[in-house]
Image 1: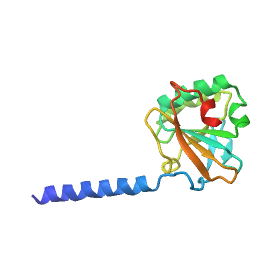
Image 2: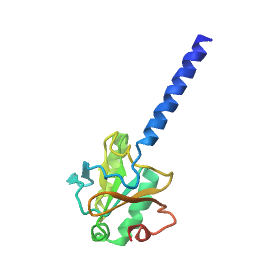
Image 3: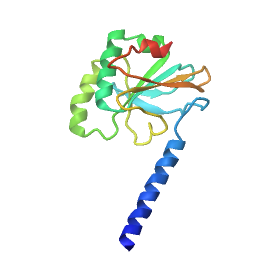
Length: 159
């Protein structure tokens, strides 16, 4: 019986921590968190004021779809729309990186690589979607939407 109560306590702690995590998600009205990362060409990226939209892919399958669609938009599409595309590579094994990074380097658009365990934790997510965070000129979140790169055009999310 003591083992069961210990398990119950552990489960309760996990559920409480999940609630706390959810309470800290970015939402409209929050200031966008500044971050530094590298892109697919190993160039440093620093978030800068004036960015109007940040697109975030959390999983490899969604990222692949988004990259193909963004590539079709042309090399200047993201920059012309004051947008940044971020993809999660944290936890990708070395062999995966060996194959994935050279493929990413072939895309004409810049891909910011989220390679830190906590970098993407403040951002809300929806399975099989790219989170699109719209910002005002001061870096305050105006809205959060979810782009399905299998069905929708990214243009609709950047207007």
